[in-house]
Amino acid sequence: MLLVLACLLVPLGAVSTWAKYEIEDADAYVATMAPLAADPAVRDAVSGAVTDSVMEEIDAGPLQSAVGSFVREAVRSFTETGAFQAAWNAANRAAHDAVQSALAHDAEGAVTIDLAPITEQVKRQLTEEGTPFANRIPVRHTEVTVMKAQDLSHFRKGFRMLQIAGLWLPVAAVLLAVGGILLAVRRRRAVTATALGTVLGAAALAAAIAVGRGLTLDDLPPDVSRAAAGAVYDHDLSTGTAAWVIIGVGLAVALGSWLSGRLRRGGPGLPRPARLRQGPAPTAPQPAHRPPASLREDLLREDL
Image (cartoon, rainbow, N blue to C red):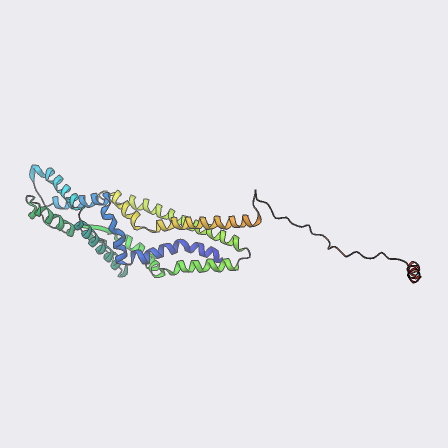
């Protein structure tokens, strides 16, 4: 039972560690999301959202399409600058703080982030480049939904429990595994069984992440980029990588334990140690029984 409980705690421990040290900590979350600013799908999604927000406030008449294309190219060029990286980090920190506040204070509204800082940066760049009417671009608060209200109510309790558990779940899994192995009659088999059970638990976690990814992308609104959302999902969920690492380590331990047992017993193609047949222990030779009369004759001969 100790080994079974240890294997069951493996996927939960991976998720609780991720929730505690990757999601709850703002600096760690921003550092995790920062590389996504260079992802082409994310840049295209941000460019489209900012361009649509800007063009809603511009009436260029017959040149509307041409101006829209120009603005989109300008925004796309801006996403390749250091200023966009800074704006991206600021937006993600704001989103993180909003989600954490909503989870902690039982907020009921949707969690959104504002693209106004990025629009302001684009306006400044276009103005410096001498783009006509760039200084007239209004900086509106364009909100992008990060988490829906119904999602908050679904995830609030479970997420809180995972954050409270933190590192205690993986520590408990290790202690249970060590205790079960020490109490086992056949410890090598216990090690092999624990490793394989860990592999099954990590595989279940990887499968759950894959299914969750598909359900999340299928539930996106039509105006949200699936490619960008998929990139964010894959990058944010480091538990997927942890699951594959656990699978690899578990298989290596199971294989090593099995091979050590085969080598110790002598596997196929290996010389088996000679084994002595069990039989009655040899006894010292006993002198033949001789009658008393024959013994007296021998003594008389020795005297003569």
